Image (cartoon, rainbow, N blue to C red; front, side, top):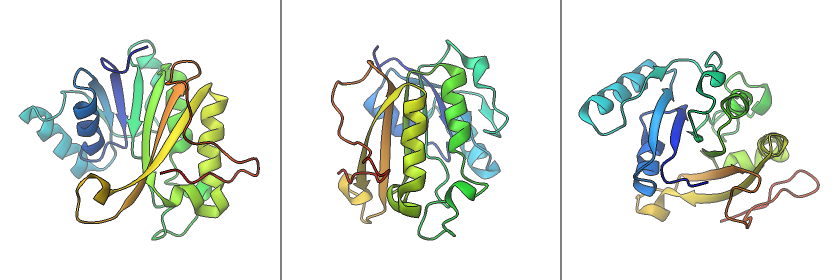
Length: 196
């Protein structure tokens, strides 16, 4: 499979920053649908689409009600920066128990849509919050769907920004469809390894 001409569903899209990064890396890729619940962000997405800065695509407002089966065979990838408050140092540390923990709906979308790859972003705290419980859940759920995963932690300053803001990026791909080597792995005790 080839990433370059992928058709993508963007979830927790925000203002489209991850989508723009995908377009730089994969100029022939196309976002075919966005899922964003925040009205201001959705309005900004629509404006960016009208300006031509983002691919024109429908914007769905709720990941929990979004039907991935409707997109089966029509998408290759799912991308998104899912909400970080459940694992952020600034949050309450509720993790899986936080109503904003949307990872189960992302895995449902991966399963229902048949997408063969995904790229997900979150704060560095995802790796260590609650002794790695949430990151372990992410990796285990991906493996349960038949995905391999690689991850890396990058600071905004790594790409020229004047601040640190570390983020973890997770690339997931169906077994046998990736690059053939892993950079990240899960320790036996469920603790994530530090990559980067």
